[in-house]
Image (tube, rainbow, N blue to C red; front, top):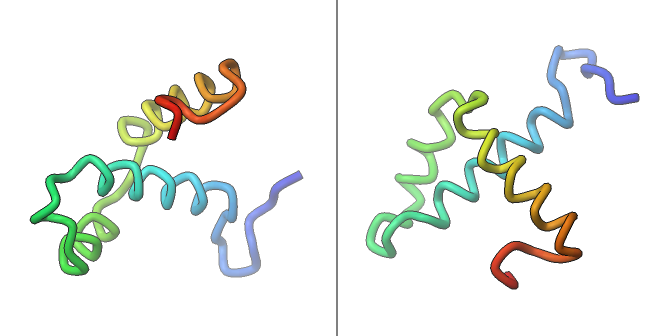
Length: 71
C-alpha cells in the first residue's frame, strides 16, 4: 500500500502530478516549451481537472494494450 512519506509527501500523488505536468507541456506550441514555462507550469497546483484527462488516457492505453495514439 502506498503511504505518505515522513515529510508528508505522497509518491503516487507526486508521480501523477508530474505525469499531468508533462502531458500539459507536451501540448504547448514549440516556442512555449522552455525551461521558464516548465517552472511556471510546475508551480501551478494540479488537481482533478488536470488529473482526470490523464487518468482517461491511462485507462485508454490499458484497454488498447499500448499508448494512446501509438505514442
